[in-house]
Amino acid sequence: VAVREGAPVSPPALPGWHQFPVRDTIAAELGCPVQVDNDANVMALGERHAGTGRPFDDFLYVKLGDAVGCGLVLGGALYRGAASGAGDIGHLQLTEDGPLCGCGNTGCVEAYCGDSALVREAVTAARAGRSTALADRLAAAGTLTVTDVAAAATAGDPAAQTLVRDAARRLGQVLVGLVSFVNPAIVIIGGAAPGIGPVLLAEIRGVVYRRSTPLATGSMPIVLSDLDDRAGLVGAARLVSDQVFAAR
Image (cartoon, rainbow, N blue to C red; front, side, top):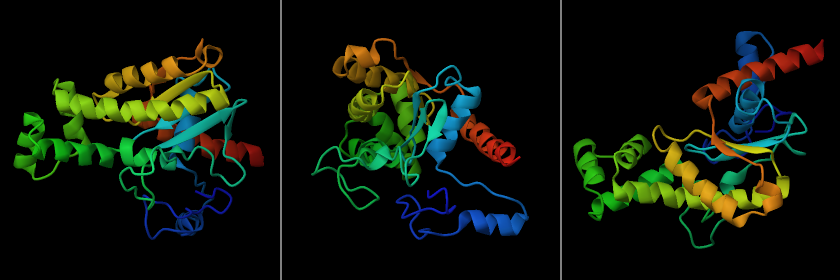
């Protein structure tokens, strides 16, 4: 999202919306000022205002879901970068020969760790006979969702748990680099499907704490968001209030 222009720029998750004037269109419809920002940024603001991030001036908020992103709070303020593109970790390339991503490249973080990736691997596991629970659900519904994967993993299905751990391990590999580069005080993870947070967290912690330097991680917790899906709502309110009072 180009914040200054109030429009998305070639968003892989929203084909056809390139440079659509979201801010100006909604402002004209409602007759009031409008703010537009990336969802991970807004969620990071929510955490900074009313979540686990309140006591920290420097932290990373990692947003999972269909799209994977990261909001950076540095020096107590949201950091967007020169063109509002900071934190776009979903399209960092993990492997050259990996699965095709929605952005058109292969092996991206999102192609391994996004909700669609989990569902894709779950369908493969179900059809290959590696998971009775997923196979039964696929036969009954004709499709699978990330909620189905989470439910199977929470119920102890080995194949579903393996899928979640594999995705978490790859995300942890990305966080190793981010933690070493940014040196945040805390890493907050949100957007995980209900029930799989603890499995994700355990795997991510294992990778990050094992592979990052002691200086960077010695006192750095990695936690799940306590605001969960409210982080975006709180952050959006904060985005608007900051704009209003800054103008005054």
